[in-house]
Length: 258
Image 1 (tube, rainbow, N blue to C red):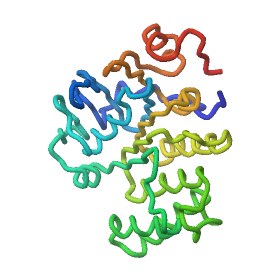
Image 2 (image 1 turned 180 degrees about the vertical axis):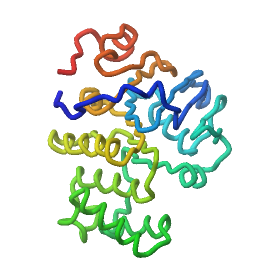
Image 3 (image 1 turned 135 degrees about the vertical axis):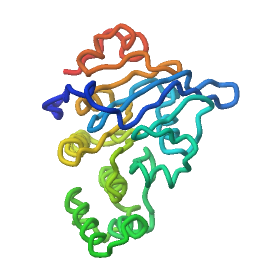
């Protein structure tokens, strides 16, 4: 595992949480997806979610953003229960950015036009709007493809674009759904460095889920294993891979991160 995360922040237990899910349950028909699940994200933390396919990781993001409501339990952001807030109010008031696994951009618009379309909704000051767009294009090294339609750029460039779109409104919480899927090794490393930079330079709290366990564990402070609708283990990467419940539910006995 490449050494992307050169340090791990240790003081989250002394901080107030920015996001909590308390005893959340959800069923789709007769199928139980989440069962009395509790999870906490502290300010400035990078938290990873791992688990088998269909365990509910993407569903958690849908609950946080307000796309779907829980059957039971509370979603608390910055100390306030937000279950009844619709998507647009929740994302704007509590500054939530979301990067979906697929899509998240306008296919027939250029890279610049994609960023401008969202900036016109979220930033009223025109000069700051232009400054923000140009800053993100520079930050994500999108200058060479600035005027190319999103449909014609590479998978890694699309992922950078969608993250840039999510950052237009200066989120405090960023949700990343499988950011490393179907990307080459060098692009994954670049994204890992971007994610760690969002924490260290912008103080953004991040939750990401991915099936690339080693790549995820390389850039998080803590990670949680979700199994049978619950968090069965949580801790730093080195502690987590030695946890018996984590081995049983997800890693197996031979998994290593280096």
